[in-house]
Length: 460
Image (cartoon, rainbow, N blue to C red; front, side, top):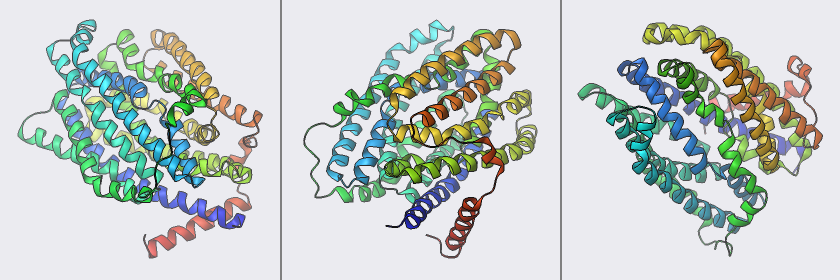
Protein backbone atom coordinates (compact mmCIF):
# COMPACT_ATOMS: atom_id res chain seq x y z
CA UNK A 1 0.00 0.00 0.00
CA UNK A 2 1.36 3.46 -0.91
CA UNK A 3 2.41 5.98 1.75
CA UNK A 4 -0.26 8.43 0.58
CA UNK A 5 -2.93 5.74 0.84
CA UNK A 6 -1.74 4.76 4.34
CA UNK A 7 -1.75 8.40 5.39
CA UNK A 8 -5.28 8.84 4.07
CA UNK A 9 -6.59 5.75 5.88
CA UNK A 10 -5.01 6.82 9.18
CA UNK A 11 -6.44 10.34 8.81
CA UNK A 12 -9.83 8.94 7.78
CA UNK A 13 -10.01 6.63 10.82
CA UNK A 14 -8.90 9.48 13.09
CA UNK A 15 -11.32 12.06 11.70
CA UNK A 16 -14.25 9.67 11.50
CA UNK A 17 -13.60 8.34 14.98
CA UNK A 18 -13.16 11.77 16.53
CA UNK A 19 -16.20 13.17 14.72
CA UNK A 20 -18.41 10.41 16.06
CA UNK A 21 -16.90 10.46 19.52
CA UNK A 22 -16.47 14.24 19.64
CA UNK A 23 -20.13 14.84 18.74
CA UNK A 24 -21.29 12.44 21.39
CA UNK A 25 -18.80 13.85 23.88
CA UNK A 26 -20.40 17.24 23.33
CA UNK A 27 -23.82 15.67 23.79
CA UNK A 28 -22.55 13.97 26.95
CA UNK A 29 -21.35 17.30 28.30
CA UNK A 30 -24.76 18.79 27.58
CA UNK A 31 -26.46 16.01 29.52
CA UNK A 32 -23.78 16.31 32.21
CA UNK A 33 -24.55 20.01 32.49
CA UNK A 34 -28.15 19.11 33.30
CA UNK A 35 -26.88 16.67 35.91
CA UNK A 36 -24.71 19.44 37.34
CA UNK A 37 -27.71 21.74 37.49
CA UNK A 38 -29.61 19.28 39.67
CA UNK A 39 -26.55 18.56 41.83
CA UNK A 40 -25.38 22.14 42.34
CA UNK A 41 -28.95 23.34 42.89
CA UNK A 42 -29.54 20.70 45.56
CA UNK A 43 -26.25 20.67 47.49
CA UNK A 44 -24.75 23.38 49.64
CA UNK A 45 -21.14 24.43 49.13
CA UNK A 46 -20.17 22.26 52.11
CA UNK A 47 -22.10 19.24 50.81
CA UNK A 48 -20.56 19.64 47.37
CA UNK A 49 -17.15 19.68 49.06
CA UNK A 50 -17.96 16.37 50.78
CA UNK A 51 -19.09 14.94 47.45
CA UNK A 52 -15.76 15.98 45.86
CA UNK A 53 -13.85 14.32 48.70
CA UNK A 54 -15.72 11.07 48.09
CA UNK A 55 -15.09 11.29 44.35
CA UNK A 56 -11.37 11.77 44.99
CA UNK A 57 -11.36 8.69 47.24
CA UNK A 58 -13.05 6.70 44.49
CA UNK A 59 -10.60 8.03 41.89
CA UNK A 60 -7.58 6.99 43.95
CA UNK A 61 -8.88 3.47 44.47
CA UNK A 62 -10.17 3.24 40.91
CA UNK A 63 -6.69 3.92 39.51
CA UNK A 64 -5.34 0.97 41.43
CA UNK A 65 -8.20 -1.49 41.10
CA UNK A 66 -9.74 -0.45 37.77
CA UNK A 67 -7.01 1.06 35.62
CA UNK A 68 -4.10 -1.16 36.62
CA UNK A 69 -2.45 -2.50 33.42
CA UNK A 70 -5.23 -0.86 31.34
CA UNK A 71 -2.97 0.98 28.89
CA UNK A 72 -0.52 -1.91 28.66
CA UNK A 73 -3.13 -4.56 27.89
CA UNK A 74 -5.13 -2.37 25.51
CA UNK A 75 -1.94 -1.53 23.62
CA UNK A 76 -0.93 -5.20 23.30
CA UNK A 77 -4.37 -6.38 22.19
CA UNK A 78 -4.40 -3.65 19.52
CA UNK A 79 -0.94 -4.74 18.36
CA UNK A 80 -2.02 -8.39 18.15
CA UNK A 81 -5.01 -7.38 16.03
CA UNK A 82 -2.75 -5.27 13.82
CA UNK A 83 -0.44 -8.27 13.37
CA UNK A 84 -3.36 -10.55 12.47
CA UNK A 85 -2.97 -12.62 15.67
CA UNK A 86 -6.65 -12.73 16.60
CA UNK A 87 -6.10 -15.87 18.70
CA UNK A 88 -3.73 -13.98 20.99
CA UNK A 89 -5.98 -10.91 21.03
CA UNK A 90 -8.91 -13.07 22.10
CA UNK A 91 -6.94 -14.79 24.84
CA UNK A 92 -5.59 -11.54 26.26
CA UNK A 93 -8.99 -9.84 26.21
CA UNK A 94 -10.63 -12.73 28.06
CA UNK A 95 -7.80 -12.86 30.60
CA UNK A 96 -8.02 -9.14 31.24
CA UNK A 97 -11.83 -9.08 31.49
CA UNK A 98 -11.75 -11.74 34.22
CA UNK A 99 -8.92 -9.93 35.98
CA UNK A 100 -10.71 -6.58 35.88
CA UNK A 101 -13.97 -7.94 37.30
CA UNK A 102 -12.07 -9.66 40.07
CA UNK A 103 -10.21 -6.47 40.94
CA UNK A 104 -13.52 -4.56 41.13
CA UNK A 105 -14.93 -6.88 43.78
CA UNK A 106 -12.01 -6.28 46.19
CA UNK A 107 -12.57 -2.56 46.93
CA UNK A 108 -16.35 -3.03 46.83
CA UNK A 109 -16.25 -5.50 49.72
CA UNK A 110 -13.47 -3.67 51.59
CA UNK A 111 -15.25 -0.30 51.56
CA UNK A 112 -18.52 -1.85 52.72
CA UNK A 113 -16.76 -2.90 55.92
CA UNK A 114 -14.36 0.06 56.27
CA UNK A 115 -16.90 2.85 55.76
CA UNK A 116 -17.34 3.51 59.53
CA UNK A 117 -13.57 3.74 59.98
CA UNK A 118 -13.29 6.28 57.15
CA UNK A 119 -16.13 8.34 58.57
CA UNK A 120 -14.69 8.45 62.09
CA UNK A 121 -11.20 9.28 60.82
CA UNK A 122 -12.42 12.50 59.18
CA UNK A 123 -15.13 13.43 61.69
CA UNK A 124 -18.17 12.66 59.53
CA UNK A 125 -21.38 11.03 60.74
CA UNK A 126 -23.79 8.25 59.78
CA UNK A 127 -24.92 9.88 56.53
CA UNK A 128 -21.33 9.98 55.27
CA UNK A 129 -20.90 6.27 56.08
CA UNK A 130 -24.01 5.37 54.08
CA UNK A 131 -22.72 7.47 51.15
CA UNK A 132 -19.39 5.60 51.20
CA UNK A 133 -21.08 2.20 51.29
CA UNK A 134 -23.29 3.03 48.31
CA UNK A 135 -20.26 4.36 46.43
CA UNK A 136 -18.55 0.96 46.80
CA UNK A 137 -20.95 -0.63 44.28
CA UNK A 138 -19.66 1.80 41.63
CA UNK A 139 -16.50 -0.32 41.33
CA UNK A 140 -18.37 -3.33 39.93
CA UNK A 141 -20.71 -1.25 37.77
CA UNK A 142 -17.86 0.77 36.26
CA UNK A 143 -15.78 -2.37 35.65
CA UNK A 144 -18.58 -3.77 33.49
CA UNK A 145 -18.71 -0.52 31.49
CA UNK A 146 -14.92 -0.43 31.01
CA UNK A 147 -14.74 -4.01 29.72
CA UNK A 148 -17.54 -3.34 27.25
CA UNK A 149 -15.87 -0.09 26.13
CA UNK A 150 -12.54 -1.85 25.57
CA UNK A 151 -14.14 -4.40 23.25
CA UNK A 152 -15.79 -1.70 21.14
CA UNK A 153 -12.53 0.28 20.94
CA UNK A 154 -10.57 -2.72 19.76
CA UNK A 155 -12.96 -3.23 16.86
CA UNK A 156 -12.78 0.49 16.01
CA UNK A 157 -16.53 0.70 16.52
CA UNK A 158 -16.37 4.43 17.20
CA UNK A 159 -19.84 5.13 15.82
CA UNK A 160 -21.24 2.60 18.30
CA UNK A 161 -18.90 3.47 21.13
CA UNK A 162 -19.30 7.25 20.81
CA UNK A 163 -22.88 7.49 22.19
CA UNK A 164 -21.98 5.26 25.14
CA UNK A 165 -20.99 7.99 27.59
CA UNK A 166 -23.90 10.17 26.49
CA UNK A 167 -26.35 7.30 26.94
CA UNK A 168 -24.90 6.60 30.37
CA UNK A 169 -25.19 10.26 31.31
CA UNK A 170 -28.76 10.38 29.97
CA UNK A 171 -29.84 7.38 32.04
CA UNK A 172 -28.15 9.00 35.04
CA UNK A 173 -29.94 12.27 34.21
CA UNK A 174 -33.34 10.54 34.12
CA UNK A 175 -32.65 9.02 37.53
CA UNK A 176 -31.53 12.38 38.96
CA UNK A 177 -34.51 14.19 37.45
CA UNK A 178 -36.83 11.64 39.04
CA UNK A 179 -35.22 12.22 42.43
CA UNK A 180 -35.26 16.00 41.93
CA UNK A 181 -38.93 16.31 40.99
CA UNK A 182 -40.47 13.48 42.99
CA UNK A 183 -38.25 13.23 46.06
CA UNK A 184 -34.99 15.04 46.85
CA UNK A 185 -31.29 14.87 45.99
CA UNK A 186 -28.52 14.22 48.47
CA UNK A 187 -25.14 12.60 47.90
CA UNK A 188 -26.88 9.23 48.30
CA UNK A 189 -29.16 9.87 45.32
CA UNK A 190 -26.23 11.09 43.21
CA UNK A 191 -24.29 7.85 43.69
CA UNK A 192 -27.42 5.78 43.14
CA UNK A 193 -28.00 7.57 39.82
CA UNK A 194 -24.42 6.86 38.77
CA UNK A 195 -24.84 3.14 39.44
CA UNK A 196 -28.13 3.07 37.51
CA UNK A 197 -26.44 4.87 34.60
CA UNK A 198 -23.53 2.41 34.43
CA UNK A 199 -25.62 -0.75 34.56
CA UNK A 200 -28.24 0.70 32.22
CA UNK A 201 -25.78 1.53 29.46
CA UNK A 202 -24.28 -1.98 29.52
CA UNK A 203 -27.76 -3.35 28.93
CA UNK A 204 -28.27 -0.91 26.04
CA UNK A 205 -24.92 -1.86 24.42
CA UNK A 206 -25.44 -5.61 24.69
CA UNK A 207 -26.45 -6.19 21.01
CA UNK A 208 -23.41 -4.19 19.80
CA UNK A 209 -21.12 -6.17 22.10
CA UNK A 210 -22.42 -9.43 20.67
CA UNK A 211 -21.61 -8.19 17.15
CA UNK A 212 -18.16 -7.02 18.25
CA UNK A 213 -17.08 -10.52 19.28
CA UNK A 214 -18.15 -11.91 15.88
CA UNK A 215 -14.58 -11.81 14.41
CA UNK A 216 -13.49 -14.19 17.19
CA UNK A 217 -16.16 -16.79 16.47
CA UNK A 218 -14.52 -19.96 15.31
CA UNK A 219 -11.09 -18.76 16.47
CA UNK A 220 -9.69 -20.65 19.43
CA UNK A 221 -7.82 -18.45 21.92
CA UNK A 222 -4.12 -19.14 22.07
CA UNK A 223 -2.93 -21.61 24.67
CA UNK A 224 -1.78 -20.42 28.06
CA UNK A 225 -2.25 -17.13 29.85
CA UNK A 226 -0.64 -14.15 28.14
CA UNK A 227 -1.24 -11.52 30.77
CA UNK A 228 1.27 -12.82 33.38
CA UNK A 229 4.11 -12.71 30.86
CA UNK A 230 3.23 -9.16 29.82
CA UNK A 231 3.04 -8.07 33.45
CA UNK A 232 6.38 -9.66 34.32
CA UNK A 233 7.95 -7.92 31.32
CA UNK A 234 7.40 -4.26 30.62
CA UNK A 235 3.89 -4.33 32.12
CA UNK A 236 5.14 -4.47 35.71
CA UNK A 237 5.94 -0.78 35.52
CA UNK A 238 2.27 -0.01 34.90
CA UNK A 239 1.23 -1.21 38.37
CA UNK A 240 2.89 1.52 40.40
CA UNK A 241 2.50 3.98 37.53
CA UNK A 242 -1.28 3.62 37.47
CA UNK A 243 -1.36 4.41 41.18
CA UNK A 244 1.13 7.28 40.98
CA UNK A 245 -0.14 9.00 37.83
CA UNK A 246 -1.79 12.19 39.01
CA UNK A 247 -1.93 10.67 42.50
CA UNK A 248 -1.32 14.07 44.04
CA UNK A 249 -4.13 15.46 41.91
CA UNK A 250 -6.50 12.91 43.38
CA UNK A 251 -5.47 13.45 47.00
CA UNK A 252 -5.55 17.21 46.38
CA UNK A 253 -9.13 17.58 47.75
CA UNK A 254 -8.00 16.07 51.03
CA UNK A 255 -5.01 18.45 51.18
CA UNK A 256 -7.37 21.35 50.49
CA UNK A 257 -9.61 20.19 53.33
CA UNK A 258 -6.59 19.98 55.63
CA UNK A 259 -5.28 23.48 54.88
CA UNK A 260 -8.31 25.47 53.67
CA UNK A 261 -11.53 23.64 54.63
CA UNK A 262 -14.33 21.66 52.99
CA UNK A 263 -15.93 24.74 51.35
CA UNK A 264 -12.75 25.42 49.34
CA UNK A 265 -12.88 21.79 48.18
CA UNK A 266 -16.27 22.64 46.72
CA UNK A 267 -14.96 25.78 44.98
CA UNK A 268 -12.06 23.88 43.45
CA UNK A 269 -14.47 21.12 42.41
CA UNK A 270 -16.61 23.62 40.48
CA UNK A 271 -13.59 25.20 38.72
CA UNK A 272 -12.05 21.82 37.91
CA UNK A 273 -15.38 20.48 36.59
CA UNK A 274 -15.38 23.17 33.90
CA UNK A 275 -11.67 22.61 33.13
CA UNK A 276 -12.25 18.86 32.73
CA UNK A 277 -15.20 19.50 30.42
CA UNK A 278 -13.03 21.71 28.19
CA UNK A 279 -10.22 19.14 28.05
CA UNK A 280 -12.74 16.50 27.08
CA UNK A 281 -13.51 18.44 23.90
CA UNK A 282 -10.00 17.74 22.57
CA UNK A 283 -9.83 14.86 20.01
CA UNK A 284 -7.88 12.43 22.20
CA UNK A 285 -10.12 9.37 22.06
CA UNK A 286 -8.79 7.46 19.04
CA UNK A 287 -4.95 7.85 18.90
CA UNK A 288 -4.50 5.34 21.72
CA UNK A 289 -5.88 2.67 19.38
CA UNK A 290 -4.53 4.01 16.08
CA UNK A 291 -0.93 4.93 16.97
CA UNK A 292 0.12 1.40 18.13
CA UNK A 293 -0.70 0.19 14.61
CA UNK A 294 2.00 2.50 13.18
CA UNK A 295 4.94 1.73 15.46
CA UNK A 296 6.79 0.10 12.56
CA UNK A 297 6.44 3.22 10.38
CA UNK A 298 8.81 5.97 11.63
CA UNK A 299 7.61 8.44 8.99
CA UNK A 300 3.99 8.11 10.10
CA UNK A 301 5.01 8.39 13.77
CA UNK A 302 7.07 11.53 13.12
CA UNK A 303 4.20 13.07 11.18
CA UNK A 304 1.70 12.29 13.94
CA UNK A 305 3.96 13.77 16.62
CA UNK A 306 4.72 17.00 14.72
CA UNK A 307 1.29 17.78 13.36
CA UNK A 308 -0.69 16.19 16.17
CA UNK A 309 1.08 18.35 18.73
CA UNK A 310 0.54 21.48 16.65
CA UNK A 311 -3.16 20.88 16.00
CA UNK A 312 -3.88 19.92 19.60
CA UNK A 313 -2.34 23.16 20.85
CA UNK A 314 -4.19 25.23 18.24
CA UNK A 315 -7.50 23.69 19.21
CA UNK A 316 -6.75 24.06 22.93
CA UNK A 317 -6.11 27.79 22.53
CA UNK A 318 -9.40 28.21 20.67
CA UNK A 319 -11.23 26.36 23.44
CA UNK A 320 -9.58 28.53 26.11
CA UNK A 321 -10.74 31.73 24.39
CA UNK A 322 -14.30 30.43 24.09
CA UNK A 323 -14.39 29.21 27.70
CA UNK A 324 -13.00 32.46 29.10
CA UNK A 325 -16.06 34.28 27.79
CA UNK A 326 -18.70 31.56 28.09
CA UNK A 327 -18.17 29.90 31.46
CA UNK A 328 -18.65 33.04 33.61
CA UNK A 329 -22.00 33.68 31.90
CA UNK A 330 -23.15 30.15 32.75
CA UNK A 331 -21.99 30.45 36.37
CA UNK A 332 -23.60 33.84 37.02
CA UNK A 333 -26.88 32.82 35.39
CA UNK A 334 -27.29 29.33 36.84
CA UNK A 335 -24.97 28.92 39.85
CA UNK A 336 -24.31 32.37 41.34
CA UNK A 337 -23.44 30.91 44.75
CA UNK A 338 -20.35 29.36 43.13
CA UNK A 339 -19.17 32.57 41.41
CA UNK A 340 -16.21 32.78 43.80
CA UNK A 341 -14.71 29.79 41.90
CA UNK A 342 -14.17 31.89 38.74
CA UNK A 343 -10.77 33.41 39.64
CA UNK A 344 -9.41 29.91 40.18
CA UNK A 345 -11.02 28.78 36.91
CA UNK A 346 -9.27 31.54 34.96
CA UNK A 347 -5.89 30.54 36.38
CA UNK A 348 -6.48 26.86 35.59
CA UNK A 349 -7.27 27.70 31.95
CA UNK A 350 -3.51 27.99 31.37
CA UNK A 351 -3.21 24.25 32.00
CA UNK A 352 -5.32 23.33 28.95
CA UNK A 353 -2.80 24.22 26.18
CA UNK A 354 -0.07 22.57 28.27
CA UNK A 355 -2.20 19.43 28.59
CA UNK A 356 -2.78 19.44 24.81
CA UNK A 357 0.95 19.79 24.16
CA UNK A 358 1.78 16.66 26.19
CA UNK A 359 -0.89 14.31 24.75
CA UNK A 360 0.85 13.20 21.50
CA UNK A 361 4.00 12.44 23.49
CA UNK A 362 1.94 10.33 25.90
CA UNK A 363 0.40 8.33 23.04
CA UNK A 364 3.87 7.58 21.62
CA UNK A 365 5.35 6.51 24.95
CA UNK A 366 2.53 4.04 25.56
CA UNK A 367 2.61 2.71 21.99
CA UNK A 368 6.38 2.09 22.21
CA UNK A 369 6.02 0.36 25.59
CA UNK A 370 8.03 2.89 27.60
CA UNK A 371 6.24 2.06 30.83
CA UNK A 372 9.45 2.12 32.87
CA UNK A 373 10.08 5.73 31.90
CA UNK A 374 6.42 6.61 32.49
CA UNK A 375 6.68 5.08 35.94
CA UNK A 376 9.72 7.10 37.01
CA UNK A 377 8.27 10.21 35.41
CA UNK A 378 5.05 9.64 37.40
CA UNK A 379 7.10 9.29 40.60
CA UNK A 380 8.85 12.57 39.91
CA UNK A 381 5.66 14.38 38.86
CA UNK A 382 3.74 13.18 41.91
CA UNK A 383 6.55 14.22 44.25
CA UNK A 384 6.85 17.61 42.55
CA UNK A 385 3.10 18.23 42.64
CA UNK A 386 2.92 17.27 46.31
CA UNK A 387 5.83 19.57 47.22
CA UNK A 388 4.28 22.43 45.26
CA UNK A 389 0.90 21.97 46.96
CA UNK A 390 2.48 21.82 50.41
CA UNK A 391 4.40 25.01 49.62
CA UNK A 392 1.66 26.99 47.88
CA UNK A 393 -1.50 26.10 49.83
CA UNK A 394 -0.39 27.55 53.20
CA UNK A 395 1.33 30.51 51.52
CA UNK A 396 -1.16 31.74 48.90
CA UNK A 397 -4.31 29.72 49.51
CA UNK A 398 -6.57 28.47 46.70
CA UNK A 399 -4.58 30.14 43.91
CA UNK A 400 -1.70 27.82 44.85
CA UNK A 401 -3.75 24.98 43.37
CA UNK A 402 -3.47 26.52 39.91
CA UNK A 403 0.24 27.32 40.27
CA UNK A 404 1.03 23.74 41.29
CA UNK A 405 -1.04 22.30 38.41
CA UNK A 406 0.55 24.51 35.74
CA UNK A 407 4.14 23.92 36.87
CA UNK A 408 3.60 20.17 37.19
CA UNK A 409 2.13 19.77 33.69
CA UNK A 410 4.83 21.96 32.12
CA UNK A 411 7.66 19.95 33.68
CA UNK A 412 5.97 16.68 32.67
CA UNK A 413 5.68 17.83 29.07
CA UNK A 414 9.35 18.82 28.94
CA UNK A 415 10.51 15.46 30.32
CA UNK A 416 8.35 13.44 27.92
CA UNK A 417 9.49 15.35 24.86
CA UNK A 418 13.13 15.05 25.93
CA UNK A 419 12.81 11.28 26.33
CA UNK A 420 11.09 10.82 22.96
CA UNK A 421 13.87 12.72 21.19
CA UNK A 422 16.75 11.11 23.11
CA UNK A 423 15.40 7.61 22.39
CA UNK A 424 14.85 8.35 18.70
CA UNK A 425 11.10 7.70 18.83
CA UNK A 426 10.33 10.92 16.94
CA UNK A 427 12.15 14.12 15.91
CA UNK A 428 12.19 17.09 18.27
CA UNK A 429 9.15 19.31 18.18
CA UNK A 430 10.23 22.92 17.66
CA UNK A 431 7.99 25.56 19.19
CA UNK A 432 8.24 27.72 16.08
CA UNK A 433 6.20 25.04 14.28
CA UNK A 434 3.17 26.33 16.20
CA UNK A 435 3.35 29.58 14.26
CA UNK A 436 3.99 28.08 10.80
CA UNK A 437 1.61 26.84 8.14
CA UNK A 438 3.53 24.64 5.72
CA UNK A 439 2.56 22.59 2.67
CA UNK A 440 1.76 19.54 4.81
CA UNK A 441 -0.58 21.64 6.95
CA UNK A 442 -2.40 22.87 3.87
CA UNK A 443 -2.69 19.32 2.55
CA UNK A 444 -3.94 18.04 5.90
CA UNK A 445 -6.50 20.82 6.28
CA UNK A 446 -7.67 20.44 2.68
CA UNK A 447 -8.00 16.68 3.08
CA UNK A 448 -9.91 17.01 6.34
CA UNK A 449 -12.17 19.68 4.84
CA UNK A 450 -12.89 17.44 1.83
CA UNK A 451 -13.53 14.43 4.02
CA UNK A 452 -15.81 16.40 6.37
CA UNK A 453 -17.74 17.68 3.36
CA UNK A 454 -18.13 14.13 2.03
CA UNK A 455 -19.50 13.03 5.40
CA UNK A 456 -21.93 15.95 5.42
CA UNK A 457 -23.22 14.96 1.97
CA UNK A 458 -23.15 11.20 2.58
CA UNK A 459 -23.04 10.60 6.33
CA UNK A 460 -21.74 7.22 7.51
